[in-house]
Length: 420
Ligand SMILES: [Zn+2]
Image 1 (cartoon, rainbow, N blue to C red):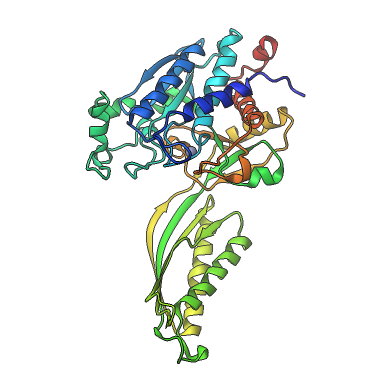
Image 2: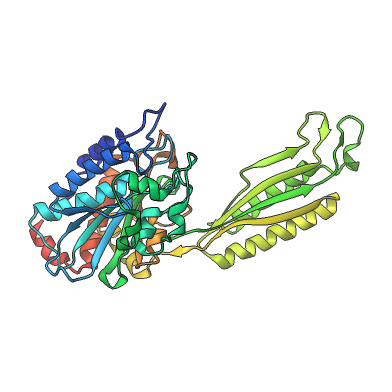
């Protein structure tokens, strides 16, 4: 068994401490960007970064950045980050795990008196979830240099723009461009995150390597039949829009299983006229489909549309799909994937490759540099929920993998093996 270098209990305790920086809620953690709870959390993170030997600054988008200087301050930096904001009544591990693990591995280096060739920066991003302004990856986009001035004008439900929210906490939104990094100065971006799904638990492994973040397409659809009396029209003569939709949903499920790991979800249905004694005449629904392989996603979509056509023709229904959203998939760097894989093996674990169905700051950071992600098992795959949980030992193993990944990327393995 490899000797443990990181302190898993400290990781878990710090995640607990951050969870108290929350609006009062019935359950879980609610910490939106640019609020006093968020500033409280930043204070804690700043203190831990200082203790780990980092110099800390806050950029004009309210990202908190701790830098552990390298032997060569001009060498490209390794960025490690995740987000400090939460959803409403969310869990305490989503986002926080990656920040706390990043600080932990720097603390290991600092306490052992090790300075790597390359600097390391740990970033607590300001707004990933996009709960308040419905615009995700605000902090990471600013650092990647892809944030636009128009995005800062987006308003929350009280009419307060992102720019005003930034101004209200004493920062200058006009300086948003200063947050951007130059890709020449960056070696890689690494993010540790809880899986938010059940695969690692199913496989019985504490962590896994992410190969990519799925692209998503969202559609709204409308299936039209003919409403009528639920008592008088024989079933064989009906044009029941809901019965047709049900057949379509089962076909979508069948196709998604056939083309796994693609995922497809019909998450919302509105049945009209929506009465217990009327045959459904119209169904309006949503389709969300995600995959890291765009070609496969387009192939499955084509088959869904064909099946819908066939089902509707057979049942005398009309169907119509409208695209609402399209986001391209992001692939993790092959070279970083293999470094993470060897770090996983070094920590005596079986390598499990996963794709992320959820978006992460790494998606935005991929515009700046090559990215790598480590997923940590979470109980029952529950996330964005007060019951979200990851055990300290798994978080510790994830941090060990992160540490080995950093050491291998900076080619410092041997020195460190001797010193820690
Ligand atoms: Zn997250």
